[in-house]
Length: 246
Picture 1 (cartoon, one colour):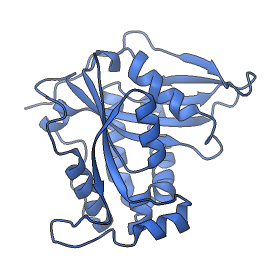
Picture 2 (picture 1 turned 45 degrees about the vertical axis):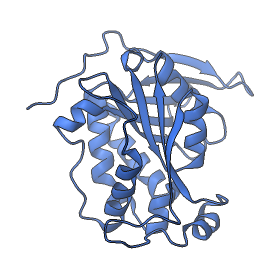
Picture 3 (picture 1 turned 90 degrees about the vertical axis):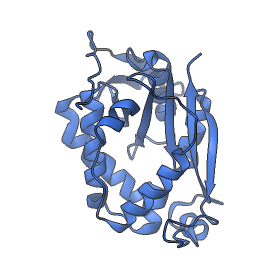
Picture 4 (picture 1 turned 60 degrees about the vertical axis):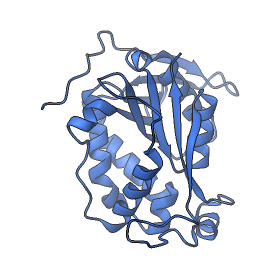
């Protein structure tokens, strides 16, 4: 079966806003399009390699992230569910959000199974945190997965990721037709942003107690390592957040 396509965005959107702390700094939330593909992949892989906690702990590199990020980016563009937040004056990308339709993913996987060991371990624990009857998926638009939320260096701490996710969930011309938005989150900051946008945390996995399918405690020592490497205190869990549209 072919994956069912999502309708095109008939009118290209552009949500403009200014920083609350500095009205002279203006930003725009725009569709993620093919012209952005390679840059977005490069930026996302770099941020994931440097700041995604599970990958940092396991030694995942930008190149090991590339196959999954490319798959998600391409599907996100194909289904018109990705957005970028761009600084108006410079044209620099500040935030990247990539999503895909869950029903279509079941028909045609977004990215191939990884041969890279750190990626295999990450995929395994994320699949487990997603397990559960949180969302009923029978057709397109029942649910999307928010796979990637990235704040680019130099644009962190400005509230741009929060603004982008909130706009995506509540104002995006396609996403607002979707019944539910789910996200397996590995970073406490992302979890907080999802919850502020109205999502509920429906499941967590304690990484200190977690064992993979081979019975290995692959994340033993992650709390101390992530505090040292990323300055995130008491890091010990991944979570699944779900926004259900009323």
